[in-house]
Length: 153
Image 1 (cartoon, helix red, strand yellow):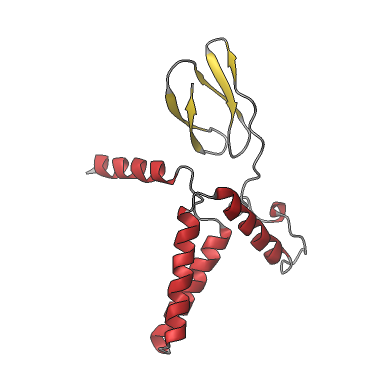
Image 2 (image 1 turned 30 degrees about the vertical axis):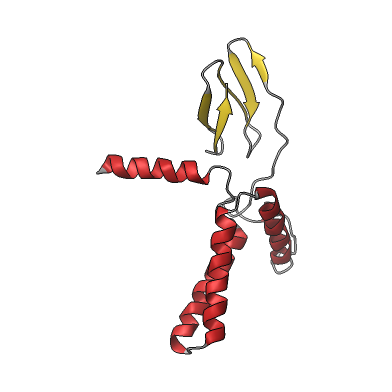
């Protein structure tokens, strides 16, 4: 049974490669949806129901979206909006815990063949990584940020 859940976990991770996932805006929208649907239990209202389900749909849409650049811009605008209400008054992600901060996208270093290894940069944190040359497409996990990406060696 443990192998079943391991395989399921691998399949879900492979499905989410190249998708946005749960960012801070998606978590806030999910929370607003749950609150709206909870209020609807005590005060039945068509508007609360429709708004709650619309927010839930938007949250799922954001998490499974493959247009990561557009979702990142939306999340950054949301972070700036929330930054106006923080005690420190700043809007940058450095003033929050690293858990909620969306990582800055660094430009990928050009790939180069270095002897028997192919060197590349992590898509999320920019860490320099290398894989053996000539092994086909590999799934690589960054040791610094645990981000998984597929790389052709």
